[in-house]
Length: 341
Image 1 (spheres, rainbow, N blue to C red):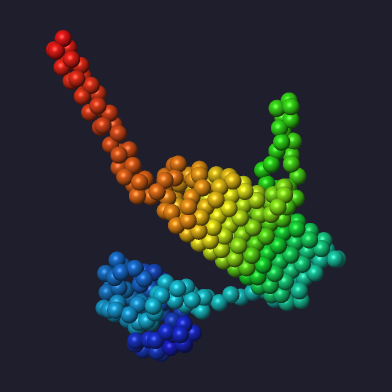
Image 2: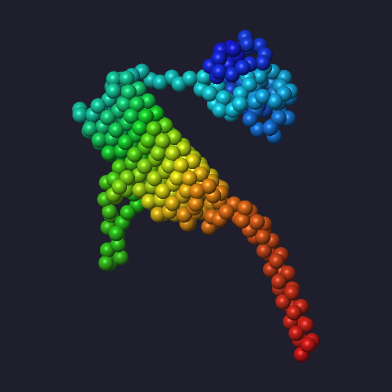
């Protein structure tokens, strides 16, 4: 599409030739003719002067671009919307593929799409315009709302609920059994039936090979707008708040409650039966073993306030030298004591 058409869709003003053809988005360093890039972080401003892009999305006050400029107060968000406009979804045609299996008492909306070898089990309901890709399995009595996208090889177990516009990436499992066992007198373990549901609210995205467990009692709930990366483990009875961000390989143990707008970096581990307050941020590989108050920024293991952890990590690196100094001081002190005697 032309730059002018793209700008109209983005509802942003343009400086430059509106007739330029734009085909795709690209990074500022590698963009070329026919591509649009963006500049959101001023520290990359030096790369702007040498970009070969046909257009750049930038805030007011960012100058020196050798190409057309789309002005935006939120360049990164505008870039995301440009990518959507230039790479529109191509959903499959509505209907159930001949090689899919849909239970006689399941309900699939006429505008939904069910791909080959997918299974929609007894009593399940699939909402309007939802797409179920190949080899996905929808369990009995599960309800999937409108405009959802369930990619290949996803398993959504029985009695789960997905709201509207939920995206589930390849290989994710929703409603797998929680880890619950009672110890017998002889030391062996008896499985506790995990029969509670998983509820996924509107506008949630769940990454590839992520697992979200069902509880024995109560429910596991992921609230609206939360975005979960690949290879995340969410245990039974966990409640994630609204607009939570979980990077890859996060693990959250059972019955923990996570507040709204929490952000966990990659490989953060969270213990069970904790409360994580609204707006908490945890640096990647942090281990959270205690509840965290709202607004805290934590790091390390066990996780402590980020500024304390940074000071502690500096000391940690110096421990070998400090140990040598301490041994030297101890030796000198012994000599002084021996001389005094």
